[in-house]
Length: 459
Image (cartoon, rainbow, N blue to C red):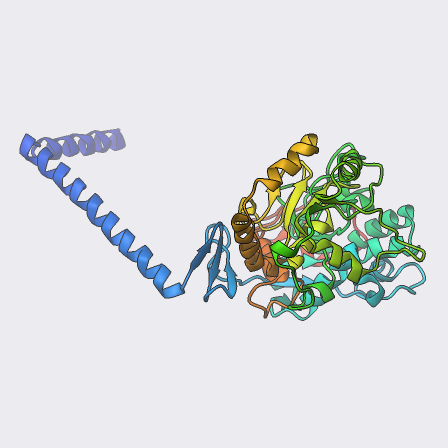
């Protein structure tokens, strides 16, 4: 009863205090409204002044959707969701640390070398691994790592006969079962690279084991031959294709002036029985003075070498990039280094670094269902001045296609690190991890994390 009386007294006293205050008159209301309006305008004024100061201090140059700082020498990622600077810590598994990693990197007989795997579309598996080993964002201490990188050259190894599909699947499962930190997070903080058109489907059981992991891939769609795509826009990162280093070096290819280019557009690639590509081949036969599409020979005396390929590629204003075995094509990235405007003819394509690049300013995407004379008419209607502007903007962005060290102001590696930083979590869990009142992480048998033994069941 005493508590009830005290509660009623508190309410009563509170009410008496409230009713004894000076009533709110119309004069008070008008004054309050004036104060709100004044505060609003002052805030807007200071906010605009602050933004102007920021732009002046940081020398930010906006280039139609991508931000460049320091007079265009580096690319700026937005603070929202990324942070103001890179501060990520990545642990790179050593190839001898986990039984089976060397098999995924060099084949069952360990005869395949990293140097033999650095070229071609799968070369990013090697390049990113080597760049991370030298990165200042690499940590040797697992306990302080934000993310874990799992090296593998499996696409190259498979192409060279070092492993078959069954062996790849078995070896990946074996490797993952020896990683306590993979089990701890359910794989959420582990990074894998699948650089070819097949994407993560190289590992047949990816959907069971890597469905929470971060996958780096140039491939955003593989539904032409699969029931589902392995790419998830919320957790995975689209990376640029691997353009040959000899092409990305400044001055290695001299672009032709638009006025001296022989063709309006070109398509340099194999038809592969794909409808869009077959349509382009036929279109080139109808309009040979506008569209170049030679039959490419990859062997024999008429084989088109790399130098000849790029000589052809630079001889048109527009480089057509249709879908092949999958939605992406290396030609899209190569076109920026010969300075022709890429025309995407692949409806499901995914492109890298969309948070900083407005692709409508540096490329054209045309419906694959409308490949025909209408496409050539449209391209011919674009004035050379606008083509030059698109080429100029593309020239600023193409540094993001180059796999160079993070010490370079602008590179694919810098972009990937920023995108990885946005994936970092403060806390990790899975269906097989639990925690106690003192912060201890335990498994289903209440064994503390440091006592977990490998191999272990996968989450």
